[in-house]
Amino acid sequence: MARKLLIVKIEARSNQAPKVQDALTRHGCAIRTRLGLHEASTDFCAEDGLVILELLDDVQEIQKLQKDLEALDKVTTHYLEV
Image (cartoon, rainbow, N blue to C red; front, side):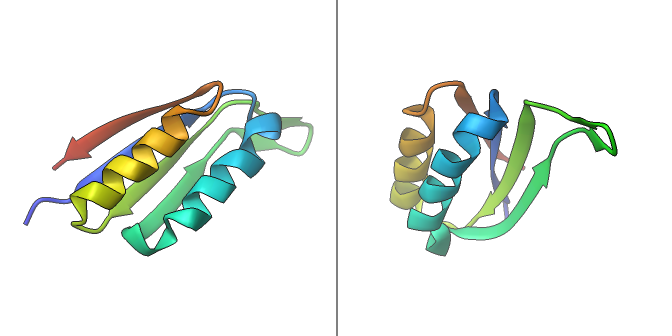
């Protein structure tokens, strides 16, 4: 069984994160697993980050999620089946 993954790159994370979160919440029933990554330390927090989503098999819902995310400024996505 192939795993469906959507990789989401977010630039200007402090501005875009609430909008990305809203899109993820709207499509939450299509998301099996979510992993957020960004560089952080006690004196630094990166403005860019990645969110890796493992998705369920609903192709139409995946396309809607990807379209909503791609509509956001400084957000790009890449879909993979592995």
